[in-house]
Image (cartoon, rainbow, N blue to C red):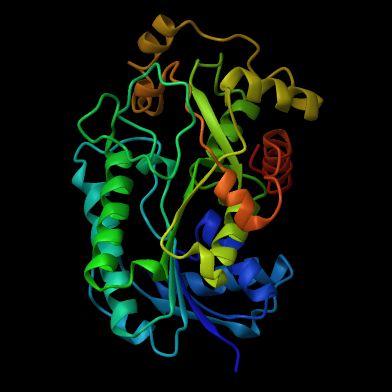
Length: 340
């Protein structure tokens, strides 16, 4: 009998790539969407990417509603919980991010535990590891680090991911099943799109290519490839050694100017639109008065964060995809999908 995996957030960037890898590995994938009207689009996208979609099922689940969660676990051996709000522009009310992130995690894990699901893989983030610390820290952040919610530069998104992951481990400890969950903590996720939806992180590359960023802010960007993150989720699901552990994931950290140079070399037809200059910090702060996306991320200005991804590389038994290859794949897919 083929094992069934419940994958929340299947219509997202990471969710789509994870579904593709699960289907290609022979699993039955039960993907959750907020509205079943999206199912046909997801099915078509995965079919176009080469997946055998006859083993693809759909359920309607909402992170803020109890409806359907227990039924969704019927016959499920593994839970992959990737669904969580992700934005670049912070909301006026931070609970608009924190509430669904935490409550969705509670609903997913409690339903999985009640159904005696064998292994849970949680998509967390470096946001739950590397924020609110001393800005001068140079040592890489590890799985032992947690974001300090009382520290400087913590925004609603980082708080939502931190509170959601902490709550997940608390639930597993209370159930005596801490070893039956693994958390994947990726940095900014880039790589090839599967459809015409650029999502959130890929929008950064889109803006560099389409000329909407006149000069590069001195904001560092830790980078990991979506295909690596999806593969780590799959590996953590079946590896006995992965249970009870967190897996930070980033290939490298670079500034926007470095990303722009990679894109300029790879896509000469767009070179004139890609910024060449790096903005002084004081100019970024002034610019942020008129650009809410930048304003929401001012806390990252000049703060270089690195992750220790050694555990993830051991899990995958290989090195991570180089950042420049991820950015080129991102750009190629944006152009292919007519998004530039």
